[in-house]
Image (cartoon, rainbow, N blue to C red):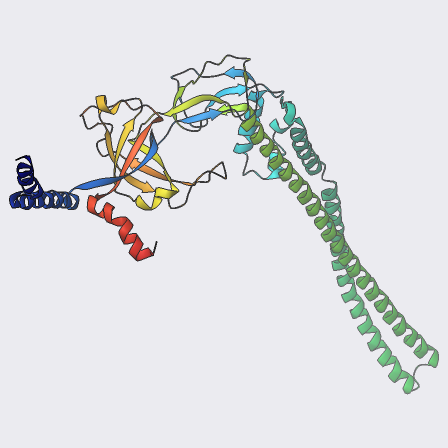
Length: 433
């Protein structure tokens, strides 16, 4: 009996009913089909994640010390409006900063003034407290004094004036000689007539030979006087030419000496301006733009500030729309393009409480930014614009704080799940890897 039941049970258990087979295959196929259809329908966005810094189009600028030293003067307070170039503070030096800036202003005002006019101004000889710029200032002032004294003394100019007077007298003398030469020509003409007449009389035996010889000597004497006078006129002409040559040489000498002094003065002026610029970069803390002063720390007069240390921050008085600056890694650069959507999570505003900022890529650099570390991966700069401003997905408007940081998720494109699954197979067939 036990054996019979066992055989019957084995028959029942060893044979699976056909309806289970049919429905089991159908369910498995249906589930697989649903998964496949889901992979074809469902799209999953591909993201590139990077850090982002929120700022404005005209970002705040830190005013840093060009050179280290103790603060001599602090000329502004937090919240004070300043204009571009306005002086915020002064680092102590051996020079009186008011005098240096006054000289710098005067040099700018007289930039187009010729050297000879500049040398006549009194401020170039004043006793400014130039401190460690004194050597350049002394060279400039000395060059001005040399040019001024040369022009006022004008020894070469006086010599030129004397030569001009000599030339004038010689020309006047030459004019008189020309008049005298005309008289001598008339006298010679009369002598020739007398000689011809005496020659005829001598040939006719009317006058003795003694008188004819005297007439011949008189004619020769007049001719000698005329030739001698002509030599004097030639000598006078040569004297005038020599004086004119001397005048030209003096003029060239004077021009060369003035030109040399003017060049020296111009060189001293440029060296002084360059030295003042270097001094200002080292000792003057000036605002780079119009804005409002914001102290990053408390400063007191006499306190030491190191070279490169931030003194104040100048916040633009006119704020522009917020933008996000993103550093895109080189490995993801090919996926990013302008117009792509970006979700920004700010560290100062938890996204679950405040929501996300939604923007898009407005600009993407085509050249990587040079990395300070040669081993670091190059990065490209992208700029995010926010069409809705600082309004989040929860409808809350966030207060713009300069240089807020956070995380940016750049939505490069939506891809179907099936394509992600097929990527390795496609790469295998197309690339052979």
